[in-house]
Length: 398
Image (cartoon, rainbow, N blue to C red; front, side, top):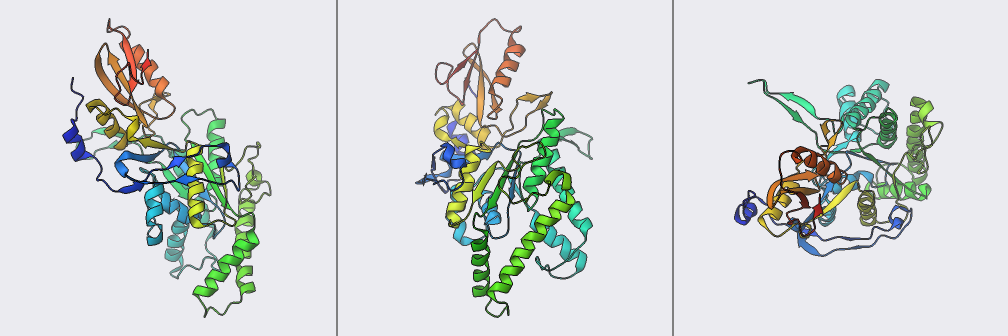
């Protein structure tokens, strides 16, 4: 029985070996508790042995300035250019996810609009620009996971394209994510995107601002500003952001501070699903807590080579998952389209008929569909397994 790639072909196609880290994760409830201790044990291991894939459609990253939220988002998406983050980035990188930094959108747009360098704390710019960027964020979140029809202009062929999951880093992105999520699920839309919302904050904001101001003055001794003056500028900047949000969405925010970890929606649901208190922590500790919070919430999953059979069928299953194959579960006649995290292997008698990628939610959905599809066509029994194992090993019987 041939299932496609043999070992030699697979090895040629596999990702080039590079060093990453084997992370043994403690999934205790404490991972979601502010101030909890996080234990990460690492050892060098080829990246082909394990990797991480998103299962959320959108991950928002919000918080005040100087909470390392941008650095954390860049590290886990593999976008950090800081050489000091090289090892951390290899340790925590998530494959197959895009990063949108709203601050860069604003900075670039303001510089085009004004023709002057962007001064974040001092410059006033068009309120219409802010509204446009907020609307674009909502559009991105609402459209996540929905296949888009693409027509080839040369021959008229039609196909569907699904965008990659997106991490949106911005001051209002968490609130907007909660708003979109509640609206879509409130309308009963089963195909609504999963939006994980992360807040970086400090339980000691005065110390956070002071540390940031001291670092700035150390790096810019000729700034002409005193420590107190710089701290006042920083505090007023954050206050301006909070008040602007309260004025823009009064019915949704209800006078709350958008950086309050206990902020709720109008119907009482938490705005933030992962809350990271950065007070007294090193950047590495903050990155660890962020990454492990995503794992604990199943916003991302760990894929291990040892979870796949060491056979041609297992190697092909691993190749499908590593190649970012999309889940083939159905929701309201649409394919799920999240990344598959394993394959459901369909056996007709002793014959391996198909290996179908599924996400963490849709193994049962796919098995039910396949039973119905083959029930009237074959006299042989239909068995299920996963990841290249035969039906009598690690199997799921029909």
